[in-house]
Structures are given as structure tokens and as C-alpha cells.
Amino acid sequence: MADLEAFRAEVRSWLEDNCPPSMRTPMPESETVWGGRREKFVNPESKVWLERMAERGWTCPTWPKEYGGGGLSYEEDRVLQQELRRINARQPLSSFGIWMLGPALLEFASEEQKKEHLPKIVRGEIRWCQGYSEPGSGSDLASLKTRADDQGDHYLVNGSKIWTSYADQADWIFCLVRTDTQAPKHEGISFLLFDMASEGVSVSPIQLISGASPFCQTFFDNVKVPKGNLVGELNKGWTIAKRLLQHERQMISGIGGMSALGGSGRSIEDYAKEYLGEADGRIADPALRSKVTSHRQNDRAFQLTLARAADEAKAGQSDGNLASMFKYYGSEQNKRKFELLLELMGTQALGWEGQGFSDREIGTTRQWLRSKGNSIEGGTSEVQLNVIAKRVLGLPD
Image: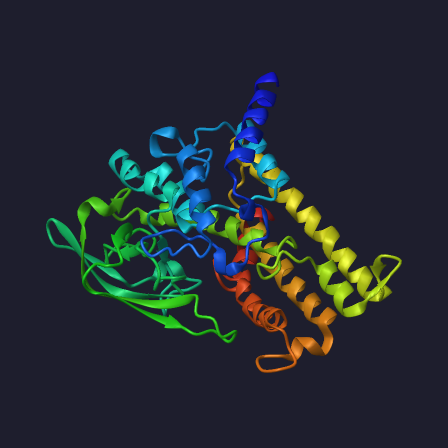
């Protein structure tokens, strides 16, 4: 305990000296740092904050030091996170490499691959995207048809992926490909890494109903991929895919919280008091006040459950099926949040563009539309419910 308190004092002192002032404020979406070759750093202090945190390995605090991580114990990481929250520090780096790929590489990659890719993920030097879903292979992912044919010293990849988040801005892709067309569909899949600048890779953004284009369709036309970029065993990529999906679903499950709405840092209570007014410091409308309170209670219970599950995972007591439960609930919680916001905003939630509506109001309405996709991405809600029914509740097919 004394060691932890000494560590806390060290962390607190370091943060006071190294976390820039603007990194202690709510982060606008435009200032989110994804890293990679094309990162522009809208706020110069974001670059300073990333470099300082990465130097300590604290963008990935529990990863081993030999791969650029912080090498912290579970208890030390908890202290670090508490101290970051205490000063409202921004996340220095948002990264699919941290949330999804990195944990899979730590478990399945060769030593050479770990040393090549993990330090770059920690420092935010490479931005990754995920090549899983295909036009005909979404919920039934194992039916994918993108092929990687053995050409001696390399694979030749042909096919396409869809709903590839930020593929138009990514540097590298982690991709599921079929390497044995004769094997049962789950057994002929491999896990490849390759550069998006490779000849034969092309990307087409997909505009959503919200007007944003975070997703893309990605095409591979005779893309040469070195054999050294195969992670794990040939034709055994489904094992890696399942584990990575657990990490992805855990990531998506965290979107249901109330802490930051549209990157504005405003809470649901802020919206309610603005549009409904206050009475004795409380939301004026009792019926909507009750709805906001109920949502807060559900949200708090969910966040505590996520924290407990994270503690259990770090102690080696994790149940992989929890990812499906959390992904399903987090998706529903986030959708309920935006439904409630629109109810609070009333007619001001009807704006799409033009006069009479603020940028924030228009943004909230578009985020409401975007939230509908939460029940599809990362495995549909129907798939998650099937997993829960079979593997958690033990129900028959």
C-alpha cells in the first residue's frame, strides 16, 4: 500500500508538470488525436501531451516495457487512471491499434512482429483500420471471400471489405482473408497485416444518413503482402478474429456513457436545464427529470459493472462472453441517450441545416441518427443476443 501511495504521489506530480492546460478541458471531436502519418494536431498541445504520455508508455500503461508500454501492474494502472480523471485529462490517443489490434498481437504475434508494430502503436505513429466485414459477409463473418493466394514469398490479396472505419485515413489494415477455399469456413481463414499504401488498395467512403462518412468500402486488386505479415498460424485466423472481436465489443460498449455528448463535455442535465428551465436548481419538468435520473442511474450501474469486469479481466478471471453482453447494453444505452436528448430539445431537435438551429443542435440530431448504427457495428444486436442465449444462459438452438 505504501508503494502505491508513493506511486500515486509520483504520478500526481508528473501530471501537474506535464499535462498542458488545454488537455484538462473537454475535448471537441475535431481535436481527437488518432495518430498516424497524416495526423494534423489541430491543437498543438495535443502533440505535446501525446509525446509525453507515449514516452512514459502511458498510452498503453499495462503493456510490457519491451514493446513501448508502461509496464504497470493492474494496481498501478488503476492509480494512473484515477489521477488522470482527477484532473479531467484528455485521452492522448484514440487508436484501434490500442483498443483492438494491440491486445491480439500481444497474444498471437511473433516476437519480431511485436517489436515491429507495438511500439509504433504506443507512440501513435501508425493509424490502423479493420478489414473484417464484406458486402456478403457481415453477421456471418466466417463466410468471407477475400482471398490471399500463396505466391511463394508473398500472398496475393483480392476482394473487398465494407464498413471499414476510417480506411480512407488509415496507414495499415489488419485483415481477415481466406487462405484455404477447400477447408470448412472457420478453418480456412488467416490474419494479415499490410500497408494501405500498397499497390492495388483503393478506398471509397460511404456517406451515412447523418451526413458523416466514417465508414468505407475497401478494395484489394492483386495486393502483394509479405508472408512475414501473417499473424499466428496459417488458416487459424478465426481464433485471432474472435479474440479481437471481444476487444472491439468491449470498446463499443463504452459508448453508452453520459460523460461527453458530441465532444462538447455537456451532460444530459445541461441539455435539460437549457431547454426546460430550472426550479430550485433542478430540472423544471418532473416527468423528464425522472427520465434523466433513471438514465443516470442505469448509466452509473453500467459503468461500475464495466469497471468490475475490467478488474476481473486484469486478475485473469474474465468471461469472454461478457463482451457480447456489454456491447449489447452499451449500444442500447447510447441509443436511449440520444432519444432522451431529442425529447429534451423539443422542436430544436428538428434542425438539419440553416438558420434557427445552432451547430450543436444540428450535431446532436445527426448523432442521434448515427447512434442507430450502434446496434449493427461490431456484431449486430441479434448476434449478441444469440451469443448470450447460447453461451451465457445455455439455451438450446
